[in-house]
Length: 164
Image (cartoon, rainbow, N blue to C red; front, side, top):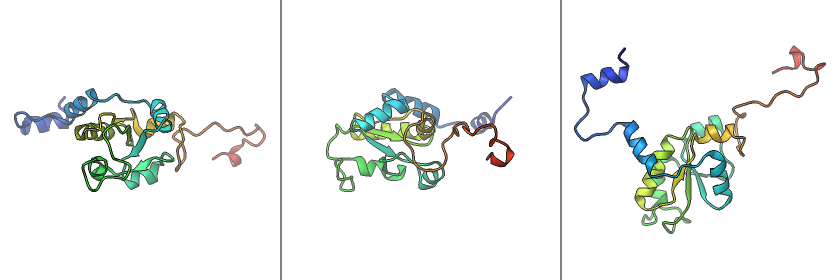
């Protein structure tokens, strides 16, 4: 059975030398020492800059990590290039530890690789993104957690009128 992608590839062959997004993502990740949410939290607590690159709508819908630096993806390289006049004030050298977080851990890999291309050799990202961060129970602000904690109501008050 052919998928939509297979049909498109058959009708529109890619140009020679081009790579698909899966190949680009895999190449980016070979350069990163990706962190699971707990490792990322420890790195952040140890002084790494945790950068949330998600658009405002995603942050509003899903929440944020307290203290993370919000730099949307479309301006990331300008804010983190120590050579650029549009850089952030604390971006003054190439040894800065930067941990990128996105919603699910895909865009963040590409963004961290782009920062490495600028010379920020310690840039990396969070495996699973903000979704994994929430599931791990790490500090977050905003909408309800991914998994609601079980009710601790007594059996007497746990009837239908008291359930959400």
